[in-house]
Image 1 (cartoon, helix red, strand yellow):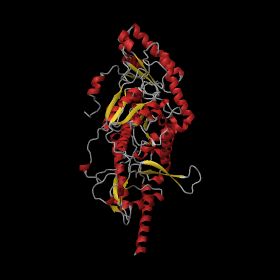
Image 2 (cartoon, rainbow over the protein chains, first blue to last red):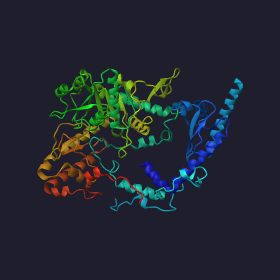
Image 3 (cartoon, rainbow over the protein chains, first blue to last red):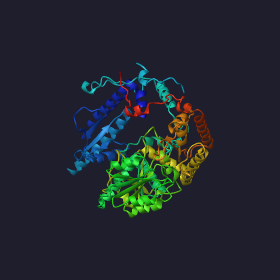
Image 4 (cartoon, each protein chain N blue to C red):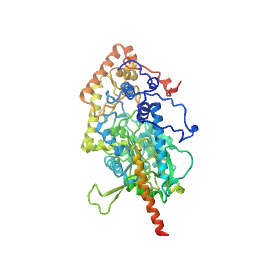
Length: 123
Length: 492
């Protein structure tokens, strides 16, 4: 019932605008994240509003770091796919704001810096 | 409410009526190739006001507990307190994603844990799982637990499920779904399970005896302890169908009666809206020897070592590592909003309040039963629990007016009909459950309406057979509707 009322309220043009905004926010998000050192898209195919991101280290560590920054950063895919332990499924929706994306990128850049720092110490 | 038909929303609205919730939606052509984009989207553009009016009109054509007395037997159509909705709508609870890490969802996990503990205490079980989504789903989960339990004990030959004819209709279906064989028990002249007949039916293949108490006739199975002993002595398990738990809260506990497995319908007993058929919530409770078999995940509370305040000394987590578990019964953990509603209801009432709920539910049912006993047949005319079963057999024989006709006539007078033709062991059955949330005035008005209907049936039976006259739809062809349902709208 809720879904029916939602579709009726959005209508054809509203649903299209909503979907377009989802798509745009997700692309903005991944462009920004993939520009950080050590972060990249794991797969190359077209995507809609969620995308698999390879991170520099264990996904769980990145997500812990984000949680400390009060950000729920996505799904640790290692839970179902052991070969994707360094991958996070990230998504954006029509409710994601550019400011939130900024905050995510800032938090991730701090994780990246620290990871590089650790690597430098080990070398 | 207007008699005019409400046109489909697809027939209203038009270009330029769209709600601009998302301004300036970008062109997506550069982000996705055209092969991945749809060309047609058969949805209408309506203003929000027109959408609100459309659904309000449709809701006004629907009998609901908010608009009318709804004595639908066995369904416990009680008032749904608004405070439940307020709690479930708290943004932190409403917007929570099930994959939120445990550390960031402690409040929600505490709510699940507290409800689980409270239900275990209220119904006398060792532990509950909030995983199953509704009553029949919970029955299936419980029977899977029984199957795993007997399998582990090397007793996989136990495949017989004993189901009295006063049990709920879903019980035999659930038994069949796990590959068990149903053994039906005929109830005695008092409408209850006869321990002698049960003793003859149990044996080395008995797996589970499924019962409802009070049973479908609204009668308390007063020999339940003896019944449980017979089943246990034969090596079987006792299952309690909690559909009728509204009669028992604070009065008696299925665990104390000897039940090993049980379910509750939170959408009945714990005042959650039925939602036109869902979503529901059907937690299952088990005795100590079955706790390890509960569906995953289970919310567990780890004590913090240096905690000192009661509210601060537990850390909650979802436990998936349960090797003897039957596994998950559904995606994610529960219908969480219903868990919030149920706990709100439980705390708003407290134990004393829940006791009063059950006492008033029983009182209201008996009030109606006594007020109607001289106009309807009462095949089991003795004090009932939260519901009773009357019969229109005499009216049918003498005037040709059936239970169905009485139910239709009630619609004209603004009432939802009782459950009819169930349970099957009463001919022309009318199963009436008023619940505790109705006032004496409402019950009196219902009695007056039903007595008037019976009076008309005696003087002019044809008038009752032609009801309802006031409803938007009169008598649909139910057989054809059930056999060839037409439920899907297609564009053009």
